[in-house]
Length: 113
Length: 110
Image (tube, rainbow over all chains, first blue to last red; front, side):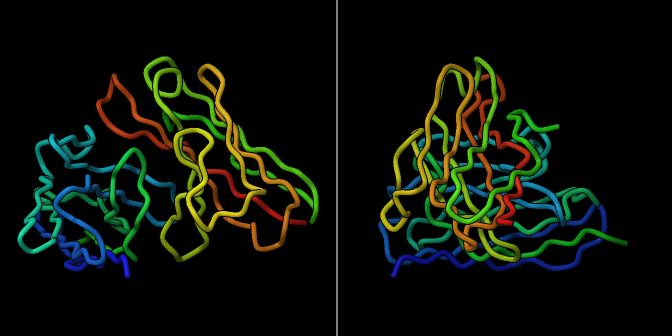
């Protein structure tokens, strides 16, 4: 069964750091583009970052968030530094191959003092 | 303010045909294909249409997509109550070097 499972979310203070993980199974992870998309409470979808043969990141997170992957562990990561209150959102990982086809269930990140 | 513009809401009665528009520009929709996503409250989005008009396996044929110039549309024919959800369009943007989404359209089945 094709599956993506995110973990690592939680409550963090402004300026803090967090690392999200996304464990993949049921497909060839190493050859798939991958990405992160977030959704603030009551708001729409916002692309965060993608990794394939290159790395792309949204301007709002560039310099603070870093996407990476470990193909030996079939795992995608999002390293988040200098977190701000407006980074509060559900973070989804998804396969990114000309569109986000397979999605995880999401992990909630709350940035608050 | 989203880069791609969608109406915030749409509605229809069961059996009707409804369309949802997505307007972009030359750096995104005008140059790249459009994907559509369906999202129910509290759940992850689902890819509904990719590369403008292609349906992934499992998506009913009553969902269709089209694109012309810098605009795209999602059409739902034979509207059903279970179609009540939020719908988002997305495209790659060359100026921003990333994916851009529409603000989303909340579809209500009356």
